[in-house]
Image 1 (tube, rainbow, N blue to C red):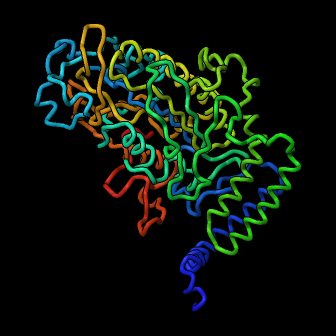
Image 2 (cartoon, rainbow, N blue to C red; image 1 turned 135 degrees about the vertical axis):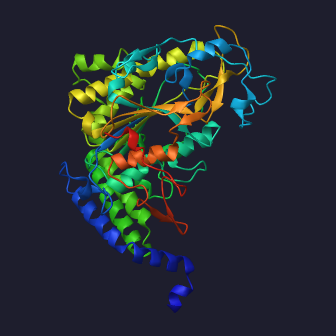
Image 3 (cartoon, one colour; image 1 turned 30 degrees about the vertical axis):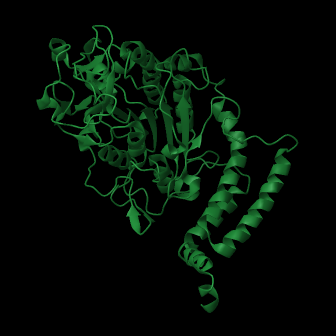
Length: 487
């Protein structure tokens, strides 16, 4: 004790080593099985995941999140407001705005003129769900999806809003949804990461919000749980290829030697990140074979490619990413996420929004069809949505054929389909201005709680100790599973 007291850092690491000894032992056992070089499929429990998880029988084994970064305009796509035609260029009533916060982009406007959607809506499916003409392919799938029109958030600007919905907090530093799932449930394939991310190209507004890797980062969780980005050009995963002059045998010997050094370091200081580093090196070695196979779509029949539309063979397009997500799902990737940028129509919405919708409409519907044809939709959860909504009033100049919309956190629309979701459901209602929720509000914490629930996790019991607190993806404020959309 006298020796340790002279070195407080070492004392802290030694205590950490003591409390993590059992998990380190499990990590070493798992590493030993990985280093045999024998690829095989296994249950999540044998190659990752936490003891006792899932908490109950999951409805979905895996999830795919289609994220529309920039905030799709709900009243132009999902939230039909026909009475707004009579309000063209009239001011948004104070009784509707209710003094709510505005962004600095429109707070200085002299007035807030109503901009009705110029797009036609028509009924679809058994329930006659009203969907915009911009989404003909997805509209044909309304009997398979649960549409939530009453999402809301506290964040009004992009960076905190997207950080909030992806990590459960507006401030950086928390673990992302995919990292939580990777940590909790592990993977079904030891040769691919449990969590993979793609950033798709887009054809709408060229200026788009930046995406930061904290959106798929591990935060306070060990770094091995962060998302692995699949790239559209060059190495599919950054730094995956061996340098010139280094073959697989040399790389194997280097990793063995490095693993031995890292094991010695782990034994000496007890830092769990050292074992995470070993696991990441080993995963990278296996991915040198598994990722090229994943990305090679030459074995896909033409009738499958046709489901996703004409852009499917172009790497990096949303269509190609959706096909990649299906290939990941069938190979045991627990969670994949596609970020599609450009949904930020502050101006010239009629020019840019149709392009954005064409990017994602057929591929999203094609993904659902493909999963169903393969018998995978029943145990694969698919989520489509953005970080907040848009205002019914116009930002900038308003004409009969042109308008823009500002950020609006008080209501927006998302949809879910697949494992455990009841198709044909429409939940929530907004006022005639699509400005306030009047029935069945759903917070973004409720959405994340529901995603966890469908994967067999009770969000209240799913915690990680950090800075003296039991951290949760869904925070500390009350939230609920959205039972109304469950099958």
